[in-house]
Length: 334
Image (cartoon, rainbow, N blue to C red; front, side, top):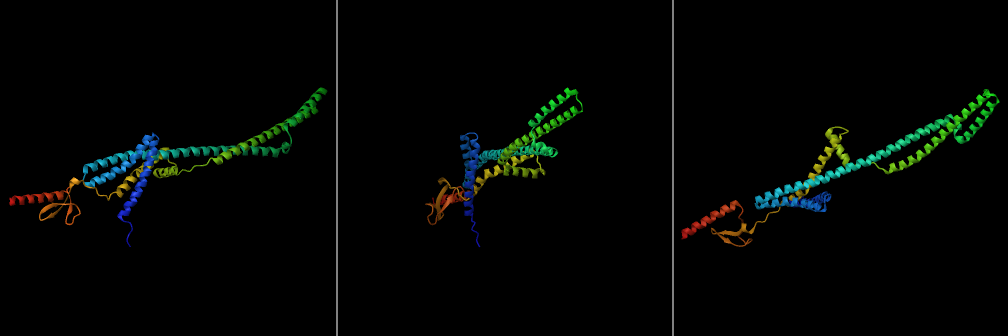
């Protein structure tokens, strides 16, 4: 059974992947440059194309034997790729840090809302417990009002004054004063009951609003934040890595991702175009054939003739030997 994966299919696949990666790389560079100006965005987007062209051109120049041109193109590709790497690093780290910061703000707001809701819930529970204890000890407290009891205070005061005018504050007067104290105690308890009821009612309204807000504030689980935390935990071997460890992990991951996105397109496109053969300038090609010890100029493709590559050192050496042999024959004939 023969494999359908041929060199041609591999190069075609590399071409498609390389072009897609190139478009994505241009987009990342463009978005990074747009933070400065539109001109920067366009220039950095074109830089992504220049990187791949430089490495492909260097390969073609090497196959043509143009070593200096290949070296210049390679150096340009390295320099351009360093610039593109900077844009991808800035875009990647900027995106990851922004996501981390936004997640932190969102979850801080979520925690604050949850804490506020929990605090109001505790207050509500405490006041309900106090109200229940007050009702348990004084079953009548829910059936009276403090204003109604205050009217009894006025009546008790008048009775005490009358008793004092009759002959001083005797046993009956003391009893009236005790009854007044009992009424005052009932007033205090009735006021406490009313106050607790109002607090409970107001707190319940506040709590209901905060619960609604808390339900709208969702906890945000970020894949980027979780990835950074996971790698930091592995690197530090700690369940709670420090802020410094998280920061360095963020930078290292950003550097790795930026390297992949920068060099994916040049690698795939270089692989796709690696089978191209560089064309030779006409001045370096001689069409001819060897017949009877001499050279007969003709066009390429004629039967019995071949293309001679003048850039090949072996070919040049052979032609020099043939030319010397021809000169010797001419001298012998003369």
